[in-house]
Image (tube, rainbow, N blue to C red; front, side, top):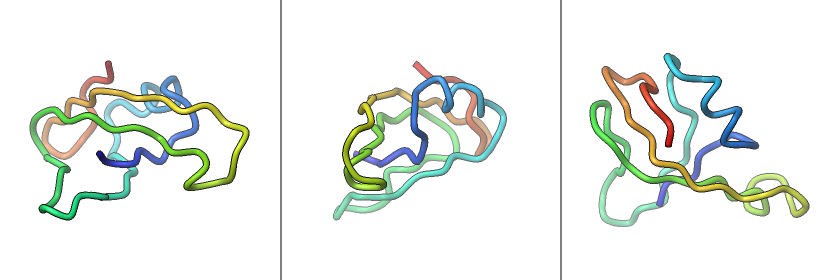
Length: 70
């Protein structure tokens, strides 16, 4: 599952129309798709230490830009 580099899902939603900030974690090839959907999460303890909340999101991409966040 890809790590989304956003503190909150709200912050991710505010970036619709922009490029996605993420970290690939798959050993079986890239999960990022310029067009299509994938599931990702933030891992606050992986990025900045503990104390922040984790979220999961389904991200829809179109032409390499965030089109929708669920």
